[in-house]
Image 1 (cartoon, helix red, strand yellow):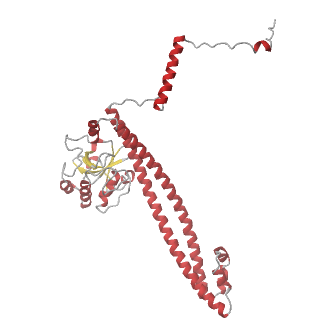
Image 2 (cartoon, helix red, strand yellow):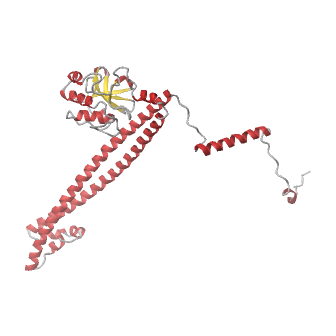
Image 3 (spheres, helix red, strand yellow):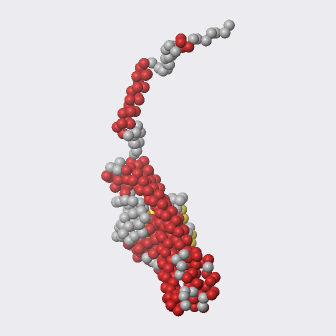
Length: 363
């Protein structure tokens, strides 16, 4: 027999069934304390997640990682800046040429104006001159065939006006393209700059969690323990010894320049003479020898002949990490001069302290 549905008036007065919390009153009270504690942590700390407690060794490892990522972003910044500088130079050159052509156009039109004045005084203005002196270049170009009715001199002048107008229009179109490229490069620069600053700020916050002695050991790990991280020109081997070992005079000059940079600070994006980043140092060293290197590590590695590690000579460029994000200048005896990272000045270091990526002989 089918059950009869319950009348609506009875259903609406029924009390809701209580759901079980699957726990005792004590369990519910404990859960309440947990929720209250989470809320308190959110109010006091902004989030419920406390920073993990890291050992000094873990902090150093994490700071090294952040510095490597910052250096990778620095090299991308350097590459974008190099391209932006080229785009700006091209744009300036096009604008200068457009200005010169505009001046020539004005001179040609002025000469035609003088002819027109003379013709008007004698027999009225020639139709071709009226067309050439029009302020509407399109109207002029459409009717330029009328120049054939003018004399030879006027026809040549009108043809010159046509050429200048066409040339100026082309220059303006090219300038627009270079301007768009420049704007894109500038946007790229801003992105890479923000990334570098973000990574360095995070590294600095971590370093702030080290004690003063721990930070000093991180900043100069070789202090008092030999010459592997020498940062002054009087420490370690003097430059003349290595200069004599260089394969040629230009390499010797690059090595001597690098020795002169010892102790100068690392500043990302810097190319000297008072501060350097890693590729800025090698570029400046070889520039002192009359050789123009490209700006970034990943382009410098292709700026010469690749050499195996076993055949290194003073002046060679030595590269590190899988992304070719760091470079130093080899000086002999398994050592290089390089700009390591922010907080660590230009110094001498062994080439085996970082993962090897390759080497290039510039000259």
